[in-house]
Image 1 (cartoon, rainbow, N blue to C red):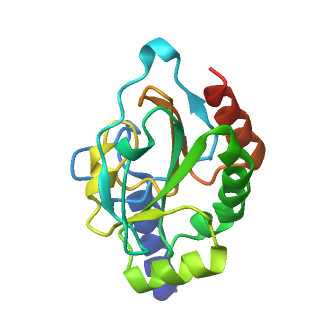
Image 2: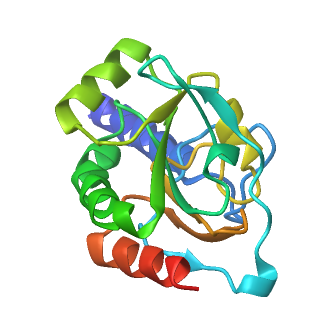
Length: 188
């Protein structure tokens, strides 16, 4: 009976630890997992904030930056190989990326807090078709603090042609939500 009580206490602590703070807002330095429902939140054009200038080494040995895509709609996806919802949404991202590429939409992954070997294996398996910045220390993710909680993974941002954050989803994205939002932002 005592083992069962201890198990219940540990379960309660684990669940409580993943839930974050009561306000729902990320606190500075908060690295706990933040769950999301994957729904796209679109920001009105007049309320959009400029995306930070980000850059870094890619998993394939190159370099990538947001500035290199100036004037285009960019979908940023924060992921990690150890993240189950990231694996679940990978085919959705791959398909939307392929269908919108000719329309001027670029995709860029941000591999967050991962081992490079595991991330490369993930990319070989999923064949995303777009580069990913290797952000093991989490610097790129921290640049978006205030828009994306530092521990919200997966997260997806849509950057408009003016370099502003037009939409975000916390959690695994759904095909229709992502495609509709990308198309809407692209056609603005």
